[in-house]
Length: 114
Length: 113
Image (cartoon, rainbow over all chains, first blue to last red; front, side):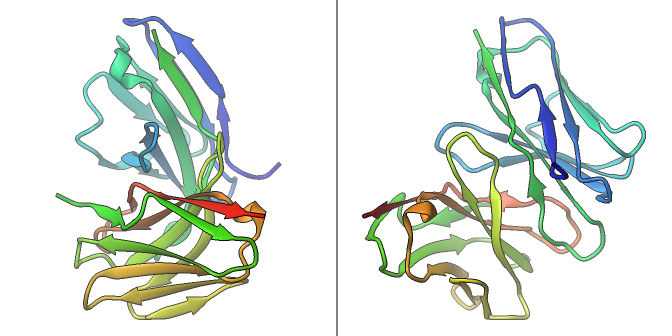
């Protein structure tokens, strides 16, 4: 499978715990994006990287959220001190840089905070 | 604030009929628009995109129309099939110097056999 992959697919955690999600983009894509999607809503942009540089962050990305892409390949999204309001689907997408084009999405990680 | 909205939360059509899903966007600076299909439990899947220098683009069984004057985007699906049942989202880029997409709330397409 050469698409975007995410791990884990599901995560259940207790409030206050830290969680980390991983995204592996399509290999030749140098842009990587994180979105959050709650039930019945469209995805909301969180942040994106071009290679290892984090170029844009949404105000939704509070100080409890941090994303990294250390080698310009896979990325991690960490949420510290999780809250029930963090429960959502976290989607990763990747694309080629240059003139804006299609973003290819992964299957998402479903986070449930109890 | 920035938003992309869809006119109808749910659209029900008969198999074989044509479907039209509408979207109103608010940011005049957007120059790239895209339609995604999302099935339950899956990530959004690309359908078709269009840039602001075009007003129509056709794909296989799908057509996207862009009316910049009234900031309106539509997706037409010809000969709708049961496999087309999903939630459809339109998205815009907000401006040309950003990588992000701004999504609307989605329209659920139900195809009746």
